[in-house]
Image 1 (cartoon, rainbow, N blue to C red):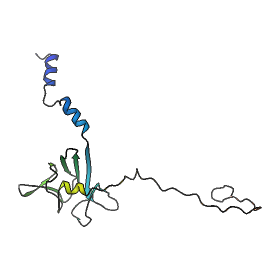
Image 2: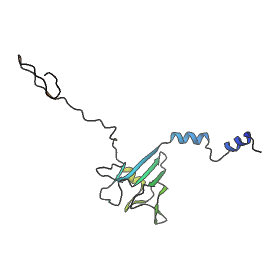
Image 3: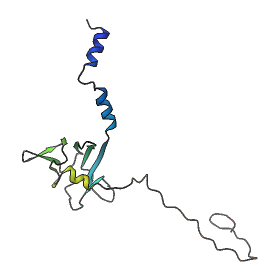
Length: 158
């Protein structure tokens, strides 16, 4: 018969339950999620490959990198595929764990995660950019004794 105390013991001893040390390490470790692709007028990936690489899609793959240097790549349903070189052969992947020095291919573009990270673009998102300030129109000072006039657009007296 399963009692609540037996159930608690089995749950606390479960290998799926992280220890407090593992939990605190997971909380303090941050992940970077970066989109790899070809830049265009409508697409601005986090890592832009050279523009002449037309076999790389605008949003080709997603690279996740942890503080410890562990990498994970996910193909974003690209037309020309994402490949990992294993035992000297290219293997098409949907997702895979990588080292920074692993050889990968995006379409026909050969690279490594370390090289991709060195190409990472530093930019602010459109929401973070400050909009240009609209300058009020400059008005000429009135000559002494001139009649005031009303601006036909704003209705203000000048």
